[in-house]
Image (tube, one colour):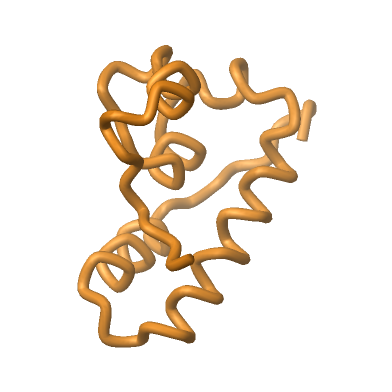
Length: 86
């Protein structure tokens, strides 16, 4: 199964998981960009590591995929500042 940065809008589990994030349907963007992600995901550090790993795998298998390239480019410009909580 190929990784897709966008969730299926008809998937009820994805809709429930992403409900606190005001219509953001891309888990990678939610984890790295949404201000509430640190509060909602108790294991955010593990989740972000897994998302980065999945993006690397996907980019390696599909290097010309424009959506993956755009997402990786966008996320690579984000500066993540560590907090006391990690």
